Length: 193
Image (cartoon, rainbow, N blue to C red; front, side, top):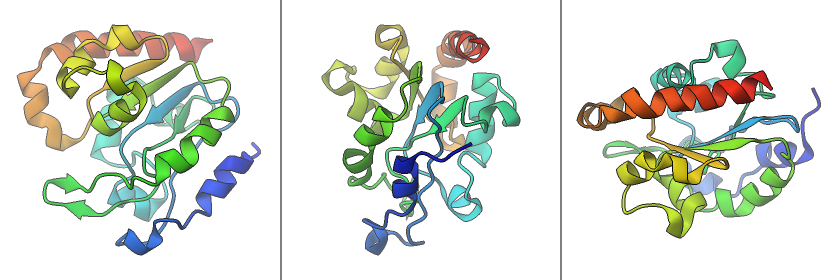
C-alpha cells in the first residue's frame, strides 16, 4: 500500500517540536481508500512511544463501541487516524494537554482532500466537534452527542472513550444504550460496502 504524499509530509512535521515535551512524532494513518475518518484530540503518551494510535484503554473502549476487531480497526482502508493534533501534547492537570492549535489548520484541509472515499468522520471529543461542527454544534458536548443524527451522514459526534470519562458515562446511560447501537449499525454498513 503506497503512502500518500500528504501523509509523508505530516510525518516529517516539526512545527510544534519546541513546545512538545517528548518531541515531535506525528501519528496519522490513512490511505486513499480510507472509509471512516477518526478525528480525535491528539495521540496519548502510549501512542507516542509505540507509534500506534489508540493503543491503550481508550482504544480498546473505542473498538468495543465500534464493534470491530483490532485487525479491522488498524486496516487503514477501514479507519483513518486524523487527530486534531498529530503529536502527543504532554500531560495536563487532568489528562493530556489540548492538541496543539497549529496542526489542524495546517494539515487537515490538504489531508482530507486526499481522502475522497471517506463516508463519515467520527468526531471524538469536544476539540474535533468544535473545529468541524462550528456554530452547528450544541451548547455543550453532551447535547451535541445527543443530537448526533443532525450531523449525519458526514459527521458522527462521540464522547472520548477515555477511562477518565467514567463519570460522564455513568451520568448519561442513554449514550451506551441508544447512541452506541446506532454507531455500530452505521459503521457496520460502511465496512460491508
